[in-house]
Image (cartoon, rainbow, N blue to C red; front, side, top):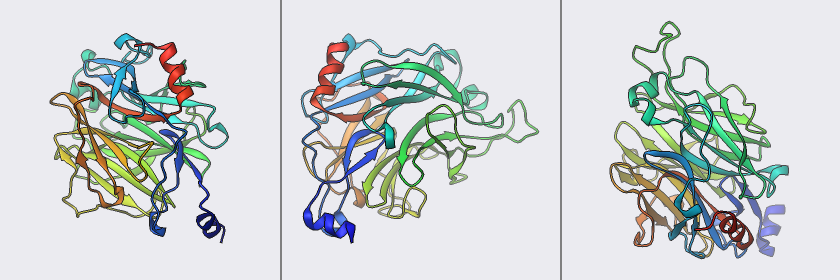
Length: 346
């Protein structure tokens, strides 16, 4: 009854999601679409740049979701001092619950490929997640490297997180592969790469992780989740075996039943990785998706007016910067955009 009254009154509801400070619920099942949010007037992106494993900030040119400019004169804003002293796949997470609007986190992969090899990084790589936090999106402090997997794991890659209202905690996701207990040096054949999950209140302590997606023998990495409202989500995954990115939809929650729009072989794009999704600030029901052409010039933008359909088309990339690698984008307010650009000017 409460939901019906909200729909009739056309009251906008705010949904707290980890990669954007405000999100309207999606009422598509009631014949409505996600409403644009006039309080959001810019987009803040966090990326790494290929052979430069630090966090770089980009701000949109006005309210254009696919036109970004480098901040801090193109220099990194965060360079890690712990672990391998290299961070990849940064993801910006907005606070949920009592932390909403008060804190943001950047989490990422502890990997400096210039100091290792791809084989070694998956056999004896870091089992931790890099974390930084901010109360204003301007200053990033309290760097930490939190170990989340036991010694049977070969690595922890591409972490991301989402506030789960049903648990009042952050659900965190990453990719790992595992070795037999008898194979302490990880020289043998590992498991397929799977997506793992754990919960945290503060990105300091985590629950014991468990499998979230295990499509063995297919290797799955690079998960990104976009909340659609009404307990509905879309998630984006890289099939590391086929080198493609595809999407799945759940109308029964984060841990519900997931289906693949278009069938089991449907994909969004090939030879890509690092999907990063976010809603458009101005156009109701429109979403954006960045896909990293890792063998080429990095991220290209895609868009969809019907996320549930799984149909995405390439956007005009003429104003999108080249060579941006796996990261994430956060829609922000005018005040937030001005504060970040004042601290980290072009």
